[in-house]
Image 1 (cartoon, rainbow, N blue to C red):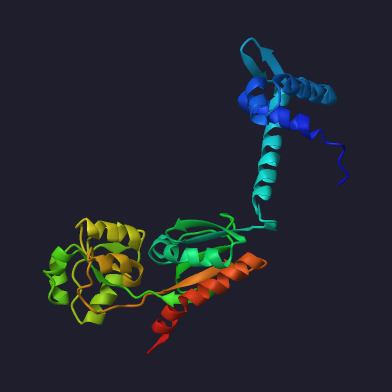
Image 2: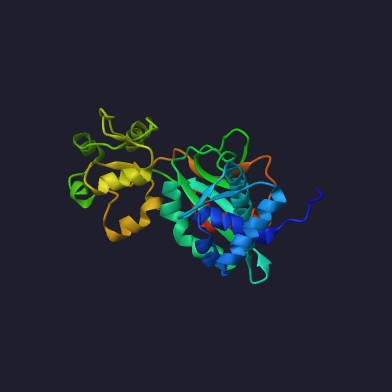
Length: 297
């Protein structure tokens, strides 16, 4: 595309003045005089053949033409600034957007991220959490870390490791639990997967009670409720090692069940960038001990 000469100084002067609705404050931001800003805006108006501001006794007001121009300029300058921010030490930094199940991100990933950043300083990692419901394309993600069986439409999926579930509760409740049937007297906190508690009782060789406890959309919030004494959780101990080590929660029974694994997923249509390849390789290496343990007979 052949572009006409762009009056960048005048456009910057207009954009800053429009944000502040003041030539004086725009001049302070741009480190020039108020007269210079006013002159640049005036030259832009003459070039466009349109008045961009109404000069008022106390400040400025945008005309319809000024309001039409501002959003495009603001977006363009923000995008330019975003690209320039990616350069560090003479090298471009790649933005990598990763979404993950909150339980995995908080319970496992966060404490390992400094290792990834030290090994890959060129990656500008942007991390978000979800409750396992995610739209990679709509949310602009490069990767999504999910829990399940690995079957998600339109995505590639690589297994990281399984996260067996077990009974977790505060010490005061754990003292009351000698055998699985003792759980019949407790409030059993549930996830949206209704088969988890029945599967655990079956594995423990105990009858299944009536389960009417509150339902949570993540193990993270379920454990927070358990810590507050709201009931007994069925959650992955691996994701709550810090709480177990501190004695905040306890695992009264050794019985576990495996209902799924954590997976690294991305769109089949995506082109693997250097940052994506680095994160993928690092994540698999960091996950390897757990992957080997969960694969052992």
